[in-house]
Length: 481
Image (tube, rainbow, N blue to C red; front, side, top):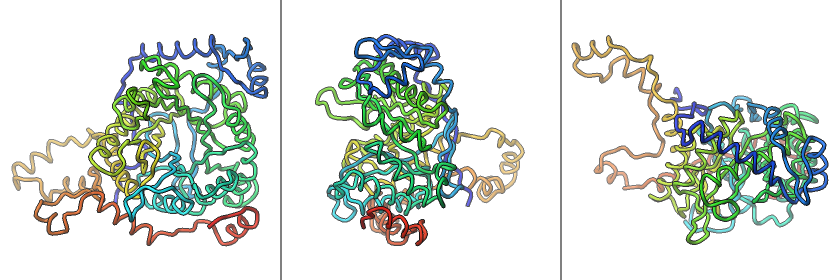
C-alpha cells in the first residue's frame, strides 16, 4: 500500500512570532550571553572558549555576539540520523518534520495491571521492539530508565545493547560520564561491522544537556560533550529550563533566556569541533505556577515549543522541540487533547525533531505500551495534516463527468486513485456505527491499543544483532538479561 503520510512533511505554516519578534528575541539572547555570560564554566571549557574569543569577567565567561554568530555559521544545516537499516535513516533540517521519542521515565504503566511500577531493563527491550513495528515513529530515544540496574556504567551499556538488539531505526541515548563514551562506542563498532564503522556512519545520537539553568554549564555534561566530539558521536544538545522556576515566567523573557542557553550549548560544541553534527534542542518547559508542578500538556507548552521551532528554523539550525508530554496518567480524554494540541502545534511550526511524541505519560514520569500504539496513529494524522492539499489535482473534467454521468463519485477512477494516495487510515480508530461497535464488544481506544501492543510484543522479537556480534558484546561487557 502507498503510505499517504510518511515522515518528513513540510511544516512552518504556524508562526507564533513575527519577523520582528524573532529578531527581538535573538537580540535579547545575544545580549544575555555577551553581558551576563555563563557561570560555573569548567576550566577545560573556559580555556577553550577564551581561545576562541570569549572573555573572562570575574567568575563568568562572556560570549560576545561575534563568537556566537561565528559558531552559528559553523553549525551544519542538515544532520543525517543514520539507521542501521539505511532505508530508515532520516535527514534533519530545513522545514521537514519528524516525530520520535524521548524521555527518561522511571515508571511504566503496566500493560496487564494498569498500574504504575518502576521501569526495568526488560521494559526497555520491550519498548524498543514495540516501536520498531510502529511506522510513524521516525527515531527511537530510550524512553525509560532501567531502575533495576544500579551501576551507571552498566545501565548505559545495557541501554545501548537494548537499542542495538531490538531496532534498526536511528536511536539515541545519554551518557552520565565522559569516560563512558569510548567503551560504548566500541560496542557501536561491533554492531556496525568493525572498528571505525560507527564513526563512518553514526547510528546513535547522544542526548547532552550541558546547561544548568539559569546560564551555567554543568561539568559532567561538558565532559560528555568533549568525549562525544572526540569519538564522532552526533549530539542532540537539549536545553530544558522551566518558566517561573529556572527561567523567567513572562513568556517573551523566557523565550529569549531559553534561546540564550541553547546558543551557549551550540557555542560550546562548535568550539570543541567546528561543524560537529548537532541538533539545536531548545525545549522551553512550563510549570504550573500555582503548585510548581511540571506541565507537559498545557497551551503554553504548545505555544513555547512552536515558537522555539520557528526561531531555530529562522536561524537555519536543525531544530528539536518537545510535545505530547501529557500530564494524564492513563490514555483518556485529557491524554488525547494534550498530546494532539502540543504535537500539532510543534509540527505546524516546523519542528524538525519533535521529541516525546510517543509513549510518554504523567508529565514524563511514566511510559506506556498502549500509549505508544495510540500515539503512532496520532502521528500518522499529524503527518497527513502537514502534507497538505496538492492543488494540481484540480480537474474540472473529472467533476463534470461524474455530475453528468453516474451522478456520484463512488468507484470513479479519481476516487479509486485517491483512496490510498490521499487518505490516512488509522489502525485503531473505530469508525463503525454504534450498534456494530457494541456487537464487537464495545471496546474503547485503550482496549484496542492494549490488544495491539500485546500482539506486537508476542510476535516481534527481531534480534538485529548477529549471534557473533551478541557473543562479542557479551564477552566485553556485562550484559544483563
